[in-house]
Length: 392
Image 1 (tube, rainbow, N blue to C red):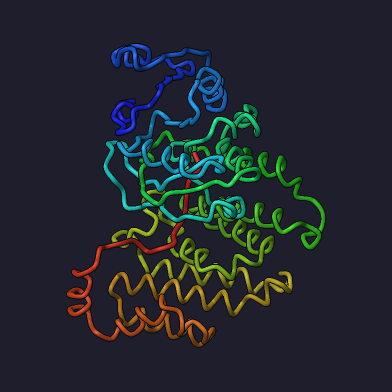
Image 2 (cartoon, rainbow, N blue to C red):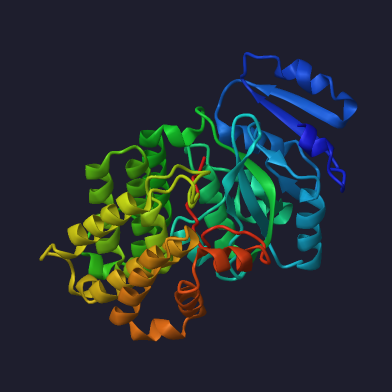
């Protein structure tokens, strides 16, 4: 609540919805004085709580700050400014930084943007953002409706799909939302997450019935995105058998997964929990390398996979080596970096013209001492396009 009150652009109103809590929420809200409006309701879930807030608000722009999360002081000024400058946008999102229970910044920052008119396509792949990272135009909610109260999780993904299908949905890269990870995150309840995700899939794309080749591209991508996310979630829990089954199903459902380097970044980091994805200090590259190729063998050594997926075999192994080479380079394992980058280029020669390939490849010859000196002149960063967003 304090982060909402400390905005450089003061909020027109701050509404606290107490969804049947048994703690001292009412007293805490009252301690902030008349700027905070407090509303109590019997426990009805996140969607109902957000809908109560929407119904009792008067502002043109509406933000959703969950109790776990925080806004940086520039959140409202930046996102409201983006909506002011782009009157056709239905909503805008920002980057988000993961924090732990005590508010300490974790490694993972998500600030990858998509053009406003194609965000719907990105959302199909399961790459979405927490509610606290979004500011929505009221007129957009009036057109698409409020949150679906039948959903017990991922109601935000459902909402972003609906908005992005009707309006351009813009973004700003600054990580102005702080997304807290702790033992009470709904992502811990994987069964509930899975049930709700498939409920959203059925709502927007239909049941998982019929031959895959008869499915629309949107349907294939959406189902594959959920299978892939669930597979990664099981890998993080050391349930490799279930995780591999789901990842195989993702590739079979959408063979184009094998043509994206992001897929292989995420598989290399599959055992790292949200907030730590891409953390080089905790990433055990040798073990993850073995796991990645075991995963690829499981997918492509199956004679029953579709021809369209089998046709992507060489590309998949090339991009897997490419991802491993870039990560090894960042970990300063330069010999390993060269080996994987050479293997990637041997399978896909056009990679040598990719700046992401030839820069690390040639720098891998200079040695760690010179590489350290070069890096001191650059701003440190993460692995790049790792986008393992955990929905709440």
